[in-house]
Length: 189
Image (cartoon, rainbow, N blue to C red):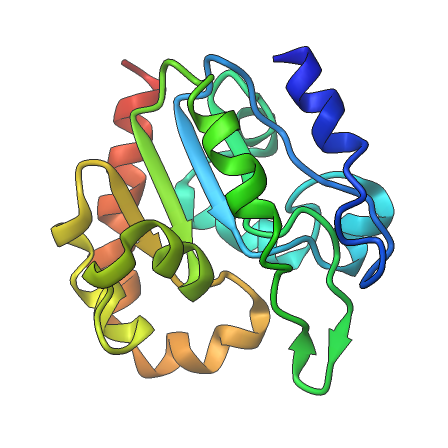
């Protein structure tokens, strides 16, 4: 495990496209794996996964505090792209496509206690669910029960998605209570 983490931290596969600073946190005993998109600028600068407003929203959705969230015996935090991809006209660029095929299987195969994988956003959902994703992200999230017990699907918790949240009140009413209950059951088992 230490060798794998060291290999990931020293990865330079994408250095022609971005400034490498792989951000990942997991252990062999992580119970819940969160698969996100890619670190944002603040996370890139601090080196702490989900250390931004998106992370605040995600912790609220999960019903956990920072101590629990950053306990890698509970949560493994693995992005689709391990480094900040840079800015686009409408937010950050998509995660680099090299990371997930290169590293995910190696990491997840070493975690022996995984009870749930939380797939955040279309990149993680498409990669892990393949042809089981619905036509739209909204439809995939609406049908979250179809992916349980192994996967829990979520939109990205970015404040940029506040408009989506306002249009889809069912998410807070129907999805988040189920997520919180599932996470609490795993943590307190």
